[in-house]
Amino acid sequence: MLQVNYIRENREKVLERLKVRNFKQPELVDQIISIDEERRQTQTSLDSISAEANLAAKQIGELMRNGKKEEAEVVKTNTANYKEQIKSLTEKLNELEENQFNLVVQLPNLPYHLVKTGATPEENEIVLTHGEPASLYIDAKPHWELAAKYDIIDFELGVKITGAGFPVYKGKGARLQRALINFFLDSATAAGYKEMQVPHMVNAASGFGTGQLPDKEGQMYHSTVDDLYLIPTAEVPVTNLYRDVILKEEDLPIKNTAYTPCFRREAGSYGAHVRGLNRLHQFDKVEVVQISHPDKSYETLEDMSAYVQSLLQQLGLHYRVLRLCGGDMGFTSAMTYDMEVWSAAQQRWLEVSSVSNFETYQSNRLKLRFKGKEGKTQLAHTLNGSALALPRIVASILENYQSESGIIVPEVLRKYTGFDIID
Image (cartoon, rainbow, N blue to C red; front, side):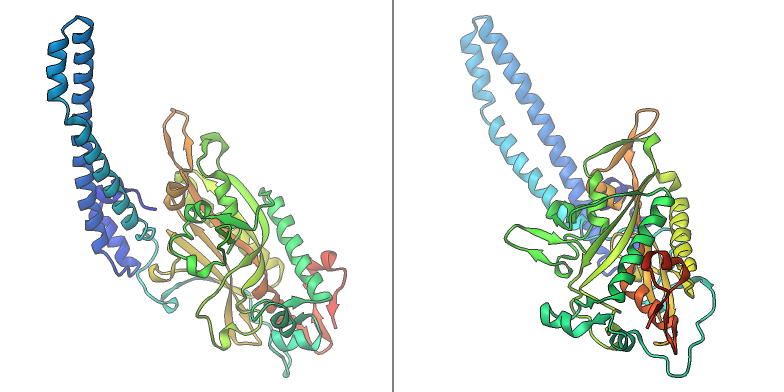
């Protein structure tokens, strides 16, 4: 959530950066500033009348102590309307603050200066491309056919049990999943991330803290009886570990990792591009989260991008890195890198990770602060990334490592799988 003071003091810059996002409601900025001006005037009036009421109360007390009851009664009569004015101004102030809040939460984060203007994925910048496409044999198949051929993922059985988008992993398919999770967690731990086990359901306050609410409630599964939400990513519970916390500057950066299942309704997702593992309602993911000093957060973002790339390199996958344009970024992000792996069988790029810097957008909602060495308290920066989401990684491994004799397991995973080939 943007800070109102910043919006008021930097109106032109806010409007300019929102334009980079292709934001359709720039009028919200002036509405927020207008309400804030009225709110500040109301607060000033309330403070003034409250001070007068307090002074009158002291006068009455002093007059009563000095035996001047009649004079005290006169002051009481003259100040009788203070309570009514204070009540009226307090109600107005609360209403203005609520209206202002409801407008501010509609503003997305401001893009970092490196983020380019754009509205569609086609306008994203290709930062780098690594490796070469796999050379496949003539009869190479997409992963959903390979899954059926080797009996490792059963999509129809998932439909029977739950519905579309909830596959069942079997035998070597299940072991491949477990191998990837362990590989990603071990790698994160070796890179200095502290492993956490977190709840898979969160309350509304947690959803608001990381920006899923009120923007994405339609994309989350909601347990209405208990008013809890199934997490769309481990980012939500892990980042909320630090909600309403004041850290010490020397504690930064804080690095956490967590494996969780993730649940997403993916409403409105249709077409061949979502076939098989390309888009699911439930999937496994290992997430990395950092709480950073504001002066170092973009250096941290580059480090996190390099870390995710190192995992793809160890898996031997051909990938590219995109810097998302303003209109393709998530609501809460200031800058995002997407990592995409080339699927030689599908002849298309598959997104496997997003790494984002949210600057103070989440921490302002979370009231996540740190105290500097001089005693000044300020908002921290938050970052997170997929490291990695499993479905499209599994799809990429199946498709890019297929051979006429079976699917070769990447060497780095063999100590986790216990086998070299799926046949």
